Length: 118
Image (cartoon, rainbow, N blue to C red; front, side):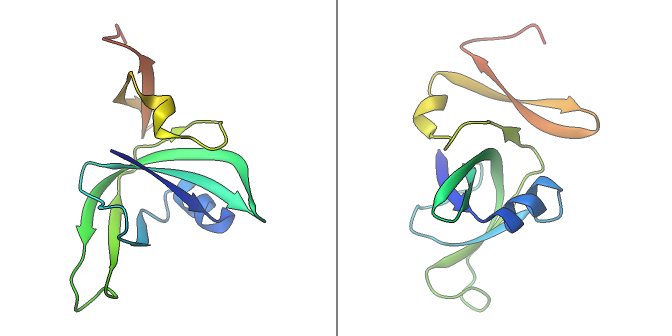
């Protein structure tokens, strides 16, 4: 499952730099570990064109810590720059997302259809 989320530029940049590997969100989308979030940068009422996908690795929904109806999500350092505004899950149907190690950072490679020789 890919959840499409808007994100402000200062938070998008922190995720991009690897400094912010969590999201605090209202749990109105039934988030689960192994789901993906498509973070679409959003500023001044419009999408900027920058998007990335991260995998949810942890869900914190403890009522002693989280406001009712909200969750904290741990996110992987694996991400993909999409370059589309916005990145919708329908655009990814029929594609395989797999990890690819690039310059000590794990990014996601999207390949059309089946297997790759990479």
